[in-house]
Image 1 (tube, rainbow, N blue to C red):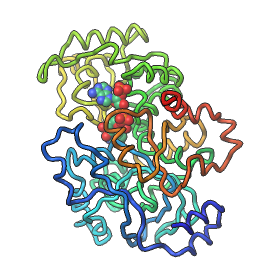
Image 2 (image 1 turned 180 degrees about the vertical axis):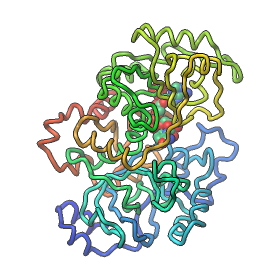
Image 3 (image 1 turned 60 degrees about the vertical axis):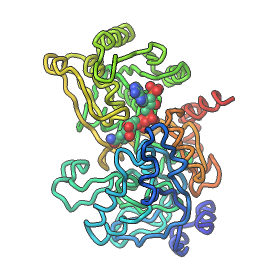
Image 4 (image 1 turned 90 degrees about the vertical axis):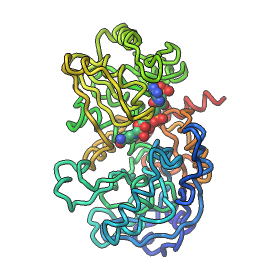
Length: 450
Ligand code: NDP
């Protein structure tokens, strides 16, 4: 890998990079099949990703004709990294085994180790014989929609393809490693003004937020729409706030500390609710929700923006869904992509049907949506939300921080990139877009540490 790193740092040509022999093994973060039962009997919060995620050498797989081998300079922690590492709600080996039965190329994925990670930035090293648009030496960001073109079901929207998967979660050979195997239709140009780490944190969360809010596959936000955003400085929320502001909407951000509230203000979000300070108790016990608390929450939203939200950006799930359905405007949309606090959801259906609201589901993004989002980032209209970067050997620690909600925005992981701050291709563009915009989350995290 040393030869690759040297070549990349020296801006070697694609031909030179293509001539460097591919090693037989590479360094990767992975979970092991033999560890599936290791946390049995523990509560979720007691399950420690530092115990289940290993970093070590694994064999390099053979490359299929429609794939690219990428030298991963940086990757990121997503919540799916947490799910995989605590084997919840299911161990991911079931996904790999199913994939193993699909084709001989799929068979490569059904291993006893699962290389995780669903984001990445890096340099293309090799392409398969069927790849048209990418070449060795290309500097890329990787999006995680893993799909082929062989199913009619995917041809209006590849997220609806019956064999759609999330790379590095439902497939092997993910991004938290020095090398990654991806389908060519996962590649996008790396934003030229960003470092490797800043380029690596966006694709999964930003594209998910884009589809949820902007694309006509979900909430289809209009100018002036008011949007209630849960976890507004989190992985998804940090991009959602920016998309609402960039699209002429009015965000109402919900967070859980004064520090996060400050960060939201700095991001340009004026309407902020600190759910901890307000002590919202939407559930009075495990089975009963409190309509008076929903009402208090709705009142606070009205006092901040003068109306009910046109769109509620939902992902906490069980803890918040009842309140989300209640506070949405008559005719409004609750768009959901997750259920962090529990997936068996309860809400009062009368508030949905009598007020003609809709619950709309959304999941990651198709290639067109991810590319549209990457374009916004490359133009400097939306900025990375990286608050900190870790070395690959500390990936378990980084995942543990996200597991316990001790982070803001996104945590990057440096893979081949030996130090923070490398990889900027266009310094003039960076200056024009503004360091203060690009590094807002990182500055904020650093000021809290000091
Ligand atoms: P983060 O942990 O980065 O952010 C989520 C934020 O939600 C937290 O920071 C917290 O913010 C808030 N939150 C957590 N629990 C609660 C709760 N009980 N009530 C209210 N707010 C809560 O995660 P991500 O944003 O990256 O992901 C969020 C969820 O979305 C995860 O479950 C993830 O798996 C899923 N996801 C789904 C995708 C898809 O394609 N379907 C794509 C990406 C993520 P605060 O404490 O400040 O309020």
